[in-house]
Image 1: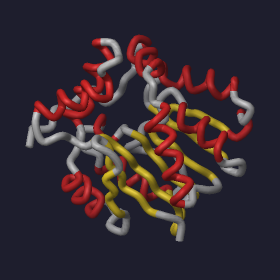
Image 2: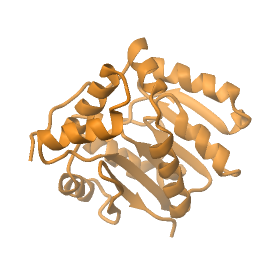
Image 3: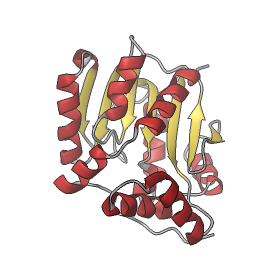
Image 4: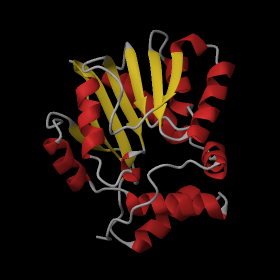
Length: 218
């Protein structure tokens, strides 16, 4: 197993935000929202690490009764998210704000659904993030934290980059490679979840590169 190599916690340059927003995330984002629907996502939803806002908008397009708050620490990402909100037919059900996933400015038990897509690997020590996600979630609520899985070898990293980012720019391929190397393994995620009040959540292996920590509606 390769050693985890950290990447920057915040992607907050105009170039990084532009490159990330331009990447084709439609397939994994659609799968993410589909899983949220299957788990029973409802009510007030918090998307932690919303980036340029693709998933909050897609959630509102898919579920007519949800209100989604997207939070991120990157100002440039939030500018893209705000532009999407203004262009959306569901702008009144969307809100974005800047805050740190490791110290959320929300009351305990204040969201019916908490989700996060591919920010876990950006955080050197994600315990505070996981504890905050558990804290703000209503008892019996829906949780979905999806992230990349760290491959077992550098050869496997190269295979996944070629398969899933081979048509992208050199910069986009490098972003994906670095993210794979910064990710956790399912065993590591299980241990972290148990330590952070999420022992009831299950680990799901979702694809050749994705895993999830999830709780369904009770």
